[in-house]
Length: 401
Image 1 (tube, helix red, strand yellow):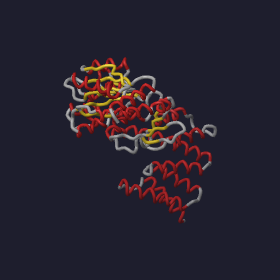
Image 2 (image 1 turned 120 degrees about the vertical axis):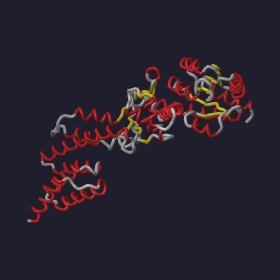
Image 3 (image 1 turned 180 degrees about the vertical axis):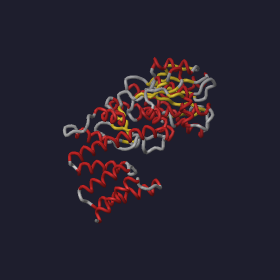
Image 4 (image 1 turned 60 degrees about the horizontal axis):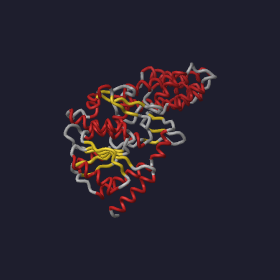
């Protein structure tokens, strides 16, 4: 395709949208700025360069007013990192796509490619720039569908692993490009509505990095998280800088967090009665497993254990209600669910032993004691609780006599 064909194609495409694409260019060197501006406006076509800036901080301020469709950003500037500028642009102009322009070699570019629409190498070549514009066209073409999704309430699931739940759709796992971006998002979500300082984040995720490299890693990962949220239609979830840019704060907007919703429902329950037991069962069913249980995040362990104890206490209360009502089968079902979720919690085994004994199911009593003994020996290298062992020995003797 010739230069003229490219220009006509892009002109038709962008003017077909009713407006040309609005681009902002940031580079501390004047000649590369003018070269890129000429290529976009003359050779690509359908592009309005709304500003060229050698001062990146000035560009960030103006971008908040001008709202460009795309920002071409030099990654290597003397006063401030292009990654940091990209992170600031992403925060204040989330609708803008960012293309890095860099003279770095291919190995360095790999890191940048993770968190931007695209990158182009200096000196910018027309054929490579055309590919970038094609990618941008595809991204914008998909925006109406995503905008529609953003209007619908979503739930961020934290039971077991982070998933996204849209109404009338199956929950799906959010795909993260790096393990660090997953953990940083999870940590900010865990501390939502609170500012977490940069030093704490770097110490948590990059403890072996010096502060300069750690800050760069943090900027890149925050950038990547925002792109992932945008790609998954989580526009309401935002990460903003705290006062004096001391750290970051995540807010969920209209999106819900399932563990938070579950605890709120639990706190609203009264004591189990025949009239309220269905509500108690619904809350039991809402609990799907450990908080962030599929990840080995040590910082999540306290919350994980707190929610676990709330669930177990609630399940035991429901089981006790059924036992008082003489509904032994329902009590068995509750304890079986407890045991399935937490096979090392001895309370469910003991309750099931007593319930099966009340039903005269000797084999089931013995099976529960055997399972408990086996699991504690294999997983914990420990013996069964003496009180449970004493009850079982007494039961065995009474059954034999």
